Length: 231
Image (cartoon, rainbow, N blue to C red; front, top):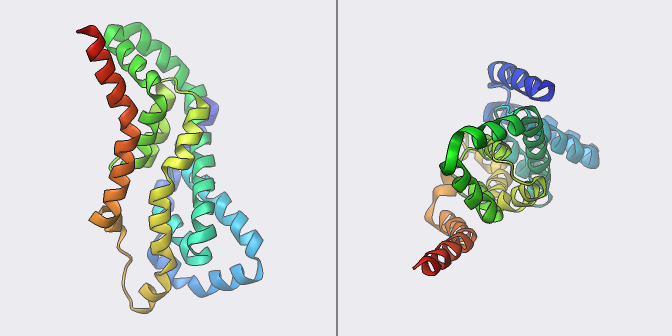
């Protein structure tokens, strides 16, 4: 339980003390300092940024969206998006592992023992379509990132599948927000605030929903096949 307790403690402390630190105002006020440091230490800046993103995701700290925008602001769409994706994936794996070893395995066993046939059917459906369900959790913008990190740990999903679907599933959203971040210089110069709702615009949301439908296709096909066999 120790890793999970540490995460909960740091997450609670960070949510209280760091909520004003990870903000557009902080980025705007320190942009010249950050750009100068990046120009003098590009490789180190990339490593520090990726490490910071790992910490933000691992401890569910506020500011993941601001971090992604910062990656675009400092490094451009590429490699900024890659830094964010790698950092978010490693952080997600760490919190998934902590939750699974600290609470997930015991909770999973308890759910199996007390849930009866309903839980077993749900779990069977999940494991039969594990990749599809995990991809859907990453692609659908309405599902909070920390929920998609913790829920799989409580249902006994495979760590390898979790890691792969996280890496590829967060790519579309990360690239969108990183591209927004790459234009922050002009936004700050105009005294404006970046529009984080851009991901819900039809021209961007449409392709993401298309990917979600593609991820859900194996689930639909299997369900249709099963229904046809039982008739």
